[in-house]
Image (tube, rainbow, N blue to C red):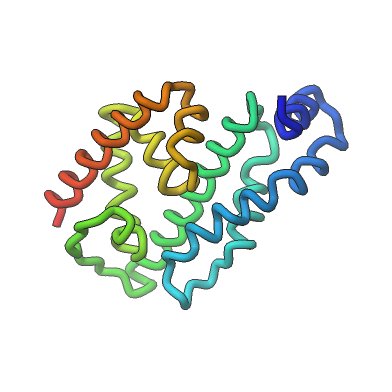
Length: 182
C-alpha cells in the first residue's frame, strides 16, 4: 500500500490528523496535472494552476471515501474537469458575451484549448458516458487527469490492452460526435 492509500484509509477511519497529511503527499502531482490542463487555457484566464488544485482539493475532502491512490486521482481528475467546465460555461454565458458558435474541431487536444471546444468535448463526453461509462471515464482520466495509459488502466481496474482498445474507440467516437456537431 502506498502512503497515500494508508492516509486515505486513516481518513476513512476518522483520524482527525490524516487529512492534513494528505495534501503535502499529493500536492506536487496534483499541481503537475493542473498545470498541464491550464497550459491549454487562454493566457488571460483568471484561474491559476494553484487555484485549480486548491479548488479541486476542497471538493475532494469531505464525505468522500477513496479506496486507493488511483481512486483519489481519478476523483481529482473529475473535480478538475468539472471546475474547468464550470468556468468555461461562465465565460460563455450570454451575460459574459456568449452566443457561441461551433468551430471546426479536428483534434480533441486542440478542442480543449478554447471554451467553446471544451464545452463541445464535455457534451460529447456526456453522450459517450451514456453509451459506455468506462470509455468516458478513460477519456476523463487521460485528458483531464493527465494520466498515462497504464495509470488510467490501473485506476479503472482493466488491463492495458483493454484500456488501449477503449481509447481507440473513444477517440473515434468523440471525433465523429464533434464532427457532426459543427
